[in-house]
Length: 355
Image (tube, rainbow, N blue to C red; front, top):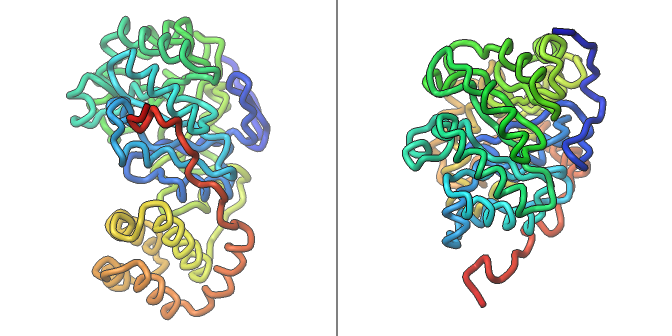
């Protein structure tokens, strides 16, 4: 296996889609809303991904599922990730997300969560290679944009399923593969075995994205140089900590001030409320308060106080009282990241069950 020197600011491509940096922001259920993706692009992610979108939810016109298909100009290029186990429904879902403006359709063959795997979707498909290939072939035939796959090493610890399945998925039409080299059984414990990523790179002629344990610039470079992957994917390390994305891309240590942290959180809160509405956003955002404000940035009792507040506006008010200099930092952020226009792309009426 050869090693290469990589600049994470170099452009690369998936099919005809140009991606400006070699950092991909992972799709994360309950996290990757539009506000999170737009923030990721501002901090250096070249490609951002939606959270998983159910093909069944799209097929039956579920309002909340369709609400995931919000695409702002400043988050592109964007991959919308779909999951399911029926090739026809997955092809339909692929067409729908492309109609909504997705630049890439990503297919999830890696989710280990029971509520996904019990439907025959996610990581379960690693052990059903023929069905997995039919899904990719159907989706690739249905859309003019690249279809990609995110997968794990296999269902069980020590599995090498990804090395058998990966080339078959490429033959079926996948234009890129993302490998998280943990087993489904491992969930997020232990270490990602990037020796498998390096082997997969040697087996396929499409870009491979290395996912798992990418927490710093040094670690990203180590993984890229060892595996010869095209890019790295960052997930949990970016939760409430967008500054780590810039550090990973550029290698510059960033220590945001309390004002910067408060301002970034306030902007995230306001953008999320616009997207989800106050009621859903108030519940959704509670986990983010700890992600942003701990790490020694704010006292734990203050975080607990925010979680107990009744509205997001009260949260904003308390943040500005606790850190008055955040007003100026927030003004700078809002000037740099103006509100996106057309944040909900209209879909064909047939998607909503019309004529």
